[in-house]
Amino acid sequence: MISFLMRRTIPRCRAYSSQTTSELTKVEVNEKTGVAVVTLNRPPVNGLNVAALRSLEKVIGDLETNKCKGLILSSSSKNIFCAGLDLTEIYKPDQEKLKSLWTAFQDLWIKLYGASFPTTAALNGHAIAGGCVLALSCDYRVMVPNSSIGLNETELGISPTAWIIASMQNVLSKRSVELALLQGRIYKTNQALEIGLIDEIANDKDETIKKCEEFIAKYSRVQSLAFSLTKRELRGKAISELTSNRQGDLQFFVDSINNPSVQKFLEKYLQSLKSKKN
Ligand SMILES: CCCCCCCCCCC/C=C/C(=O)SCCNC(=O)CCNC(=O)[C@H](O)C(C)(C)COP(=O)(O)OP(=O)(O)OC[C@H]1O[C@@H](n2cnc3c(N)ncnc32)[C@H](O)[C@@H]1OP(=O)(O)O
Image (tube, rainbow, N blue to C red):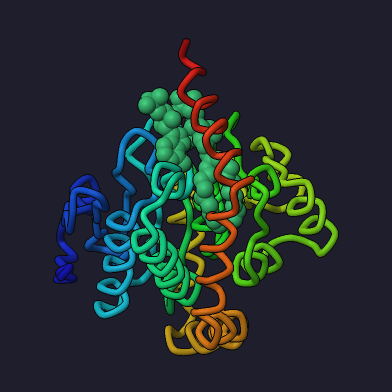
């Protein structure tokens, strides 16, 4: 459990106190503001396996319980926010593990997209596929230059499910969503800003966090209850639709991943990632 004991006399430089809940997700809470920096920590690329997804979900649940004032999602990697689901878990998958992976991803999305406090993504690097979904689930996105963000699902031969589309529709124009999803496009930082996939560009990781803090500070005069009820009104439909069709959504993902052409693509894709270094 994350402790939220505030000591208002703490000097600014010591304001963030480390409260590690797991090696996979580090949590630091600013004792002055109640804002938490939550850092994904699964090197090398923050690939999302079941443990990483569950760890982040638990942290968000704890922040919810402790009436957190805002969340800044960041990464311990130098140039990668998150490379999405762990591809090694979806290539030649163990069927039970595959189901657990998607169920954990659904659970995490429900908590993050529906969080009752302001949420931001401090994108210190690439945010691909599932990494982009995490960013889209937040209320605000700040990214460093020369990074990539997007949902490359058509490359894999699967289509994103309704709640992933809803997360993107929440941020982009209808036209941009169509182009982004149908083309499976990955955007560079400046292109992402142009279409509204991110909200701001920052020079480096520290500045991404500072800009996220500034965004969250704008809510200091907003009543927490009004904030959470309004957010629920805005996002509740997409969440209810998933909640009432979790099994169907799971089956769609499992069938898509088990499709032989998807597995064949994944084999080549993983090889191409490995051979980049040679
Ligand atoms: C093609 C899949 C598209 C799915 C889209 C679905 C859209 C709906 C979303 C919901 C479902 C979500 C699904 C997913 O998230 S699937 C994961 C898709 N992710 C990717 O396609 C990203 C792949 N990675 C990269 O493009 C690059 O690694 C990246 C730009 C992120 C970083 O490049 P960099 O050059 O800095 O690093 P390397 O490529 O050398 O990677 C370092 C090592 O990490 C391994 N790696 C990379 N990504 C993953 C991953 N997602 N899972 C597991 N492992 C990964 C890579 O192979 C390197 O390993 P080695 O050091 O052993 O060589």
